[in-house]
Length: 130
Image 1 (cartoon, rainbow, N blue to C red):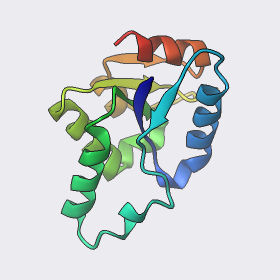
Image 2: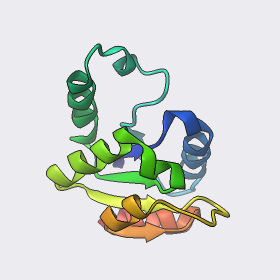
Image 3: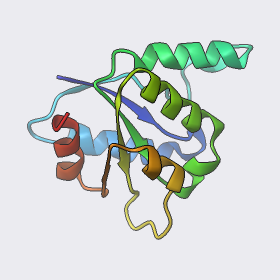
C-alpha cells in the first residue's frame, strides 16, 4: 500500500481525475490518496499559513509526491509550496509529463527526483522505485 500526495492545480482537476483513474485501474497497485481535491474543506482556511500547514499535514504520511508537470504548474504558487514542503520532509518527487504535452514545467522537472511520461506502468514503477 502506497500513500500518495498528488499535487495539481485545482483549475485542472480533469488531469488529476485521469491520473487517479489510471492508478485505480492498475491490476496490482494499491494506494491511499492524501491529495487535496478541489472540494476539500482545507480550502476554507482564512489564511495562507493555515492552508500551508494543512497541506504539510497531508504530505507528511505520503510515500512520495506526484506532480503533474503541465506548464501551468510553473505559475502555481501552491504547487511551488508543495515542492518546498516535500523537499523539507524528504519526500521523493515524481514529475509526470502530461500526455501529448509539448511544453512542461521546468520548475517541476528541476525539482523532481524522477520524471516519467503519462503511462501507468512508468508511474507505478517510479512510485515503487522509492
